[in-house]
Image (cartoon, rainbow, N blue to C red; front, side, top):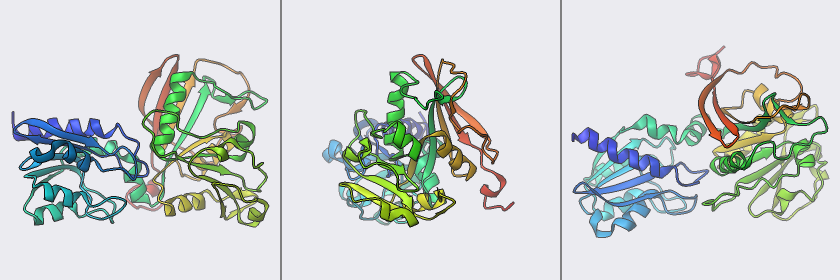
Length: 365
């Protein structure tokens, strides 16, 4: 087996490992340590604030890490954040070579490859770069655009409805699809609903799946400050944002574990770009917009959506509430189908939003 084939083999294993965690807002990272052709340690970044993949793998390898090759999906960090720099841990372990899939584009963490080389460790960069980057689209896009990566999620009928004419919408899809939706919340790290959904559905907005350590940030939009204080999301562990127009912020009383977040807006509508800016300042790299239809439509019209995840149930309502509201968005949005997954009786369709001319390579209209 050639050296390139060996590198590809162990990097694919590291990429598969990386997908096991829910590290938002941090990136997915997997690490495999190989000595004399055998894996002696491996790990992944399970949650933000927890040990990084390299540290987990080094602990497993112990003294066998000395002189070993390390395969890691993202350039080891060179800065001291919630945890010490992974570069220093690798140097201290006296590894021989570090094979990296992707450079870290996050400015504060970058520079790991240079630090390792300065310590006399061989570094190879770019092995299966595209495959590794695909697992970190949330993080990479957020760093590049300076705002969270926005995914729209909707559970719909075949005729595109999320609720009947009365606004009742509970459990359109089956258990497997609902579980996948909870994983999306954990993957994105923040989940948002508009005022009508918060009032009628009163969702908890939690990620009820195994392996989640940090609850996603829950965001309730309430432009006029009219939502009652007994919302289910306010009672859950973790953080909740109650987002209100600046001029109506004094209408919202203090609530335990709830941050009142005033943002600008006009004509009774919140400036969604300002909401994303506040999330970026908070360190969030992903946002899941779950509804309702008018809120989804406003994100689409503003050109702030990067991905669309539709969970389609084999049902027809004939009339009701559309997943993009009851009028067509004023902005054309082109989508590219990425994947189709069968989830029991339902189908999960994932689309990437195709960037417009002004969003590609910095060109202007």
